[in-house]
Image 1 (cartoon, helix red, strand yellow):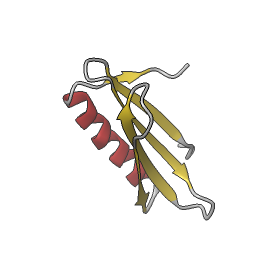
Image 2 (cartoon, helix red, strand yellow):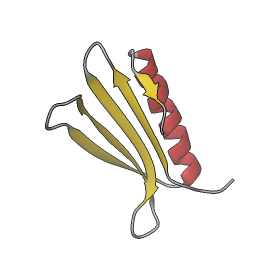
Image 3 (cartoon, one colour):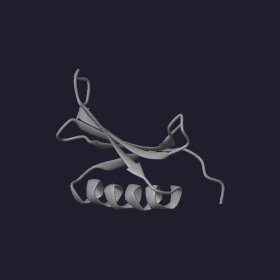
Image 4 (cartoon, helix red, strand yellow):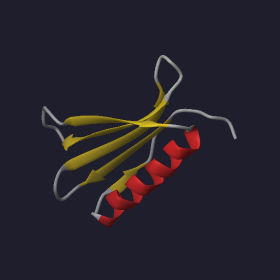
Length: 80
Protein backbone atom coordinates (compact mmCIF):
# COMPACT_ATOMS: atom_id res chain seq x y z
CA UNK A 1 0.00 0.00 0.00
CA UNK A 2 1.40 3.37 -1.03
CA UNK A 3 1.57 5.89 1.80
CA UNK A 4 -0.07 9.07 0.55
CA UNK A 5 -1.78 12.06 2.06
CA UNK A 6 -5.53 11.81 2.73
CA UNK A 7 -8.17 14.54 2.98
CA UNK A 8 -11.79 14.19 4.14
CA UNK A 9 -14.43 16.89 4.51
CA UNK A 10 -17.64 16.48 6.50
CA UNK A 11 -20.55 18.90 6.74
CA UNK A 12 -23.54 19.16 9.03
CA UNK A 13 -26.07 21.07 6.90
CA UNK A 14 -28.57 21.77 9.72
CA UNK A 15 -25.95 23.16 12.10
CA UNK A 16 -23.97 24.82 9.28
CA UNK A 17 -20.73 23.24 10.54
CA UNK A 18 -17.78 21.59 8.78
CA UNK A 19 -15.04 19.22 9.90
CA UNK A 20 -11.92 18.34 7.88
CA UNK A 21 -9.43 15.55 8.49
CA UNK A 22 -6.03 15.43 6.84
CA UNK A 23 -3.31 12.80 7.10
CA UNK A 24 0.01 14.13 5.86
CA UNK A 25 3.72 14.21 6.54
CA UNK A 26 5.51 17.19 8.03
CA UNK A 27 8.85 18.47 6.73
CA UNK A 28 10.74 15.90 8.81
CA UNK A 29 8.74 12.96 7.43
CA UNK A 30 6.59 12.43 10.53
CA UNK A 31 2.90 11.64 10.00
CA UNK A 32 0.25 14.02 11.38
CA UNK A 33 -3.53 13.96 11.54
CA UNK A 34 -4.81 17.52 11.25
CA UNK A 35 -8.35 18.29 12.40
CA UNK A 36 -9.98 21.53 11.23
CA UNK A 37 -13.50 22.54 12.21
CA UNK A 38 -15.80 25.55 12.33
CA UNK A 39 -18.89 27.19 10.91
CA UNK A 40 -19.68 27.11 7.21
CA UNK A 41 -19.27 30.59 5.64
CA UNK A 42 -17.91 31.99 8.92
CA UNK A 43 -14.46 33.22 9.77
CA UNK A 44 -12.57 31.55 12.54
CA UNK A 45 -12.57 27.89 13.37
CA UNK A 46 -10.04 25.65 15.07
CA UNK A 47 -7.05 23.55 14.02
CA UNK A 48 -5.46 20.72 15.96
CA UNK A 49 -2.48 18.59 14.92
CA UNK A 50 -2.10 15.07 16.33
CA UNK A 51 1.20 13.24 15.68
CA UNK A 52 1.11 9.59 14.59
CA UNK A 53 3.88 7.05 15.01
CA UNK A 54 3.10 5.43 11.64
CA UNK A 55 0.99 5.96 8.54
CA UNK A 56 -1.25 3.05 9.55
CA UNK A 57 -1.85 4.56 12.99
CA UNK A 58 -2.96 7.74 11.20
CA UNK A 59 -5.41 5.76 9.05
CA UNK A 60 -6.90 4.19 12.19
CA UNK A 61 -7.22 7.62 13.81
CA UNK A 62 -8.95 9.00 10.68
CA UNK A 63 -11.37 6.03 10.65
CA UNK A 64 -12.28 6.55 14.33
CA UNK A 65 -12.81 10.29 13.89
CA UNK A 66 -14.83 9.78 10.68
CA UNK A 67 -17.15 7.36 12.45
CA UNK A 68 -17.73 9.89 15.27
CA UNK A 69 -18.55 12.65 12.79
CA UNK A 70 -21.09 10.46 11.00
CA UNK A 71 -22.69 9.44 14.32
CA UNK A 72 -23.13 13.14 15.09
CA UNK A 73 -24.98 13.83 11.84
CA UNK A 74 -22.13 14.98 9.60
CA UNK A 75 -22.05 13.79 5.99
CA UNK A 76 -18.89 13.04 4.04
CA UNK A 77 -18.56 15.47 1.12
CA UNK A 78 -17.03 13.74 -1.92
CA UNK A 79 -13.88 15.27 -3.39
CA UNK A 80 -14.09 16.53 -6.94
